[in-house]
Amino acid sequence: MQDSPSDTASQKVAERRQGNTREESAVPEQATDDSTTATNGVALPVSHLTVEDILRWHSVPQPLIQALAGKTLADGLSNVLSFGTLPDATQTPLAFGGASGSGKTLVLAKLAARYILAEEHKDRPPPLIIACDHTAGSFAKLSALLQPYNIPIIQGNSPEILADAVLHKEPGQPILVDLPGICVYSPVSMGRMMQMVERVGATLSLVLPAGLDAEESADIGYAFAQQGATTMVASKMDQAGRVGGIIAAAACGLTLTYGSCSSSIVGGLVPLNAPILANRLLTLPS
Image 1 (cartoon, rainbow, N blue to C red):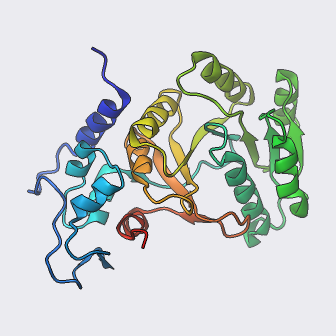
Image 2 (image 1 turned 180 degrees about the vertical axis):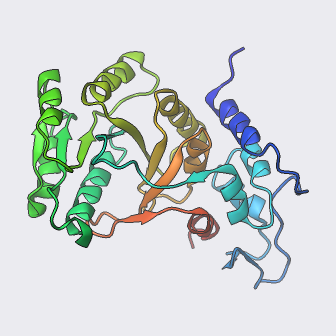
């Protein structure tokens, strides 16, 4: 029987850990009864909970919980996951994909506004946005988000428009592509998305909302990794309690870049690293 995406995620975790000879317990270290005990400098929210208990609450799959074992949770996350930055959109167009409602349009708008407001980019052309999501209201939403920043938006209604937009961009101008919402279980939906990605010669990045079922998230992460995506942005982290799905998806071979933690266009993205993600996992809702 063919391995499921979640099995593949666990296999990738095992491959990442090959060659690590440090002796570790089968599960992350447990907290003592002392209520001041801290893991990675973050006090556990309930003194009798172990780190394993907390990861289970977040719905992190058990094989990944075992793979996260180490001196601290941050160490385990560093061993299992990759953290980094998004590809340079001035060199190659950067396309954001995900399911409808995943938050990819808002993430794209935040990145575009961030580029405009950065001091080092003040003398450079603004990002060029290509809107390929043709669902009702999607273009109006994107236009409203970016209107204060005078960022040009092109509706990618045809292959010719997509190719022409890339051909006539200004030197050094970044191109960001808002892809249609897709279902990873539909070959037709995925195929149409990839046709757009290939038409503009873009690098594909996944936008995945926090709070999804971990198995579903692993399926999505695996499907995008199979299509050549190498990075992901975790959206809606301010709206979810459980974020284990983000770990399950990233463990399929995607580099975690940003977490979207606010509905604000300005300052709504946080670069993710192991300590920040460990802090988020250990800070449970009150």
